[in-house]
Length: 84
Image: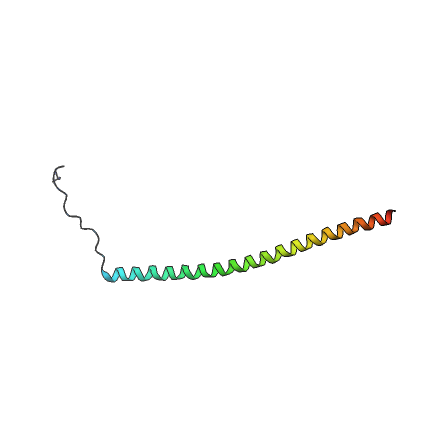
């Protein structure tokens, strides 16, 4: 027997979730969030370390380029003295 289009549908049985199941799921989500938080903390520490290394490298590059400029200028002056 088929239901007529005007007939009200029967109650939807749905899904029954016990409080124990809810608690277990909540604990699982809590543990996952805790793990992600720990991973993020480690990544942020690594990021700070990388930034410190990059800044040290940038200082060395600028120091070397400054020294090269001074040595180049002195070399030019010395070359002029030797050519005269």
